[in-house]
Amino acid sequence: MAVIKIKQIKSRIGAPAVQKKTLDSLGLKRMNQVVEKEATPAILGMVNKINHLVKIVED
Image: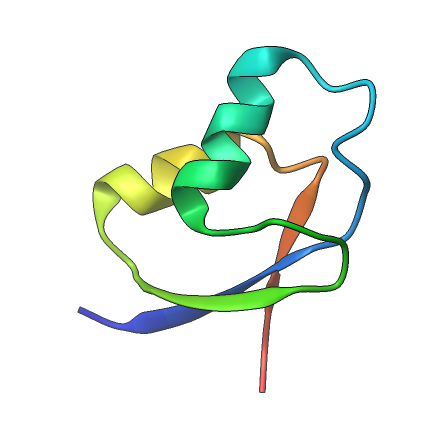
């Protein structure tokens, strides 16, 4: 599988608890933090669920 970089671009303040837990499960704790994850269907589904808070970074 390919490795993708996920960056948190918006604050978690005001987001529902489910979306905060999704950010935690991706390993994102603060704004502008970037994590590398395998591009599995589960990870891509989590990114799609909170696509207004994160973006996939291209190098």
